[in-house]
Amino acid sequence: MSLHEATTPAFRANARAALDNANLQAALRGSRGNFITKRARAREDLPEFDALRDRARDIKDHVLAHLDLYLEAYEAQVIASGGHVHWAETAEEARAIVLDLCRMAGAKAVNKGKTMISEECGINDFLAENGIAPVETDLGEYIIQLRGEVPSHIIAPAVHVTVPEIEAAFRKAHTHLDPDRDLSDLAALQAEARGVLREKYFQAEVGITGANMLIAETGHSVIVTNEGNGDLTQSLPRMHIVMASLEKIVPTLEDAATILRILGRSATGQEMSVYTTFSRGPRRPGDPDGPEEYHVVLLDNGRSNMLATPFQDMLRCIRCGACMNHCPVYQAVGGHAYGWVYPGPMGAVLTPSLIGVEQGGQLPNASSFCGRCEEVCPVRIPLPGMMRSWREREFEKRLTPAAMRRGLGLWAFAARRPRLYRIAARLGAGLLSRLGSKTGRIASLPFARGWTGERDLPAPQRGGTFMDRWKAARR
Image 1: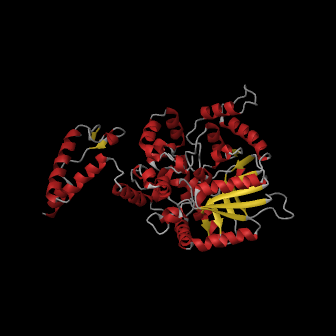
Image 2: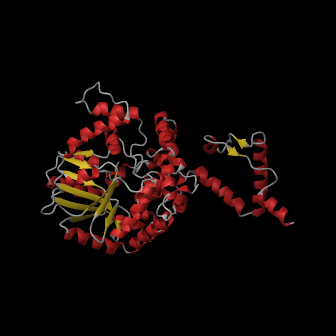
Image 3: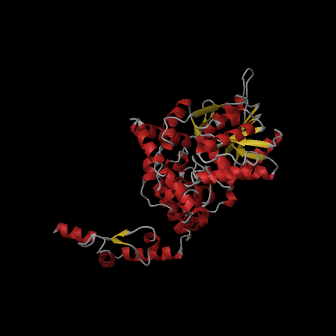
């Protein structure tokens, strides 16, 4: 899904469809809690975890304050190692650069490691339209590519797919294999994917990967994987293309090591991912393997516009997925409901920053504001505060539903008149107390079905409003 294909204005309809999708709900139930438990255990096992979070936050803030200098330093190091750096202001420019490089390499097939930037740019569809076959080599990405979908999660792209659905996709795509083979368990599915993809590694002329970090001190790109597909994708083809956004820069190898210590623990509960790979330039004389050409495509796509704004802190994000793993909204509807590349709380802030509040304005409203996303973020991004800022901008542009604006206008009218507000609050609390007098909860309200349709509303306690109790306590 490319930039112009974002469908975030349909979030409410997408969410309703997700809640009614039995297969999706079964898949989400199966994954719910696993990431949370593993992260909690990893945090407990590392006493300095919160100190590392503070250090990582400071590293990213320092980079953002001097981004131009670090980008220039990184480019100089890549060039010194024999590589090339290409600057792309927009997704369209990035696509054109990648296509030109693939044509230079004479590529008919391209292998891809997991890269959210390529998803943001719509690289797969673009290459296919121009006669080049892209093949995703990450297992989750491969599954959703066969299903014609985009990722549902930034670290577990196929978290929404059940085993029977994977089996159906493999049988449909792998028609050259024995139709009577047993694909009833995950081990068999993994073995089949490994065998099919193994052939693809030797057929592609170009390999495309993302980058978890770019190191200004040395010119390295860093990727973390659990399958080793990233290593094969970048070392076997003749050309390796790294696609990354500007904010992935870190100053030094030591800074990269600091961030790696919190990345795996926050994402999957691992001390480190199984593979952590540093790449720098093309193959040197005497190297046993590696690409003949090394290219880095650095994408802006609206990120520089976020600098020195209330949304700059979002550029600290290290793409661990912890915010969505802990988000009750994401856990209820999955990633596709968000309509574009980035789901969950981080997507609710980043998406309107990149595609505009007109397109992404519904997403900051997809939050209960429980605060868990900020609580678990490894670089302490104040996600709820930024979602509130987007809600304010949406309201200022009169993009919120008319009924909501009228309701807020009525509330503001009463709030400016304390006596009227207290009378209304007293009457409302009394009415709700009576409605929930038998069970202590209210199952349905005519003007709040968006809330009571999915959950009960606790009835207010009897004994008056807060102001009534406060006045009584002062006597």
